Each structure stands twice: as structure tokens, then as C-alpha cells.
Image 1 (tube, rainbow, N blue to C red):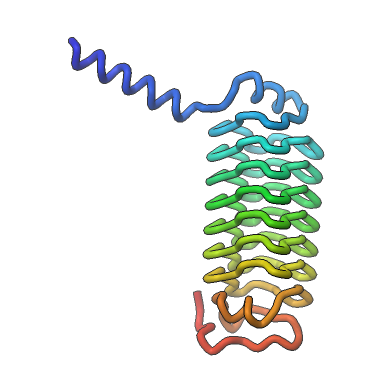
Image 2 (cartoon, rainbow, N blue to C red):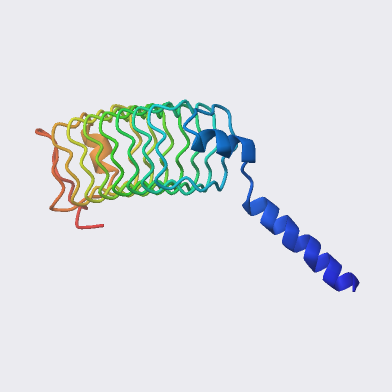
Length: 204
């Protein structure tokens, strides 16, 4: 009997840890209201319209936000660790100093987004639209930007160590030769005028 009681306690604890979001915070968001400094960890927000909302300092870690409309939203200093943002709308969103480590941003619409000082280490940005986005001083270490569109983006002082740019469009992008040299690309990567394709760029 004691054995079953212990198992029940452990099961309840695991369920509680998986469902970490605050019910009041989630209800507030789903009602179309902003929610700064809110706990939305593991929340189900796929496809929800959050356009222009204020979510500064909020925690969306491991939340499902597949296809969510966050265009023009304020996510400054928010935490989106391992968050599913595949296909999400983030055009013109404020993502300054946002923590996006291992986030899924594949095919996300991020044109004009502000990503200064954002942490995107090991993030999945395959096929993302990052045209005219500001990624200055952001961290893209080991991020996958295969097939991403970065035309007109600002990568000044961006850390690109081991970032994958295979098939990505970097034409008219502000970045330097050193940033290109420490990254990885292939013959399909479009570089800005004046930058040379490194010899080690044989594929991703």
C-alpha cells in the first residue's frame, strides 16, 4: 500500500511540474489581454491571436505557440526556452534581450522584428523570414538558419559561431567576414557583396 501511495505522489508531482502555467494568467491571455511578468510555462497557445500584446518578462518556456500571431507584440526580456513558435507571426515584434534558446522558430514570420541581444543559441530558424530584422549583438551560436531569408537584416556584432546558413539569403545583410568565417554554409548561401565564401563551406 505504501508503495502505491509513493507512486501516486510522484505521479501527481510530475503532472504538476508539466503543467506549470498560472490558470489566471492563461485565461487573461486567451481573452486577448496582455500579460507582463506572467507564468505561461507549458501553456497551450497554438494559433491564438496575441497581436500587439504586452508580454514583457513573461515566461513561455516549452509552451505550444505554433502559428500564434504575435506580430507587433512586446516580448522584451521574455523567456521562450524550447518554445514551439513554428510558423508564428512575429513581424515587427519586440524581442530585445529575449531568451530563445532551443526555440522552434522554423518558418516563423519575423520581418522587422527587434532581436537585439537576444539569445538564440541552438534555435531552429529554418525557413524563417527575418528580412530587415535587427539581430545586432544577438547570439546565434549553433542556430539553424537553413533556408532563412535575412535580406536587409542587421547582424552587427552578432555571434554566429557554428550557425548554419545553408541555402540562406544573406544578401544586403549587415555582417562581417569574421562572422561568416566562424559559421557554416554551402554553395546555395547568398552572401553580401564583398564577402568571400569560406573554403570550409561544403554543406551543413
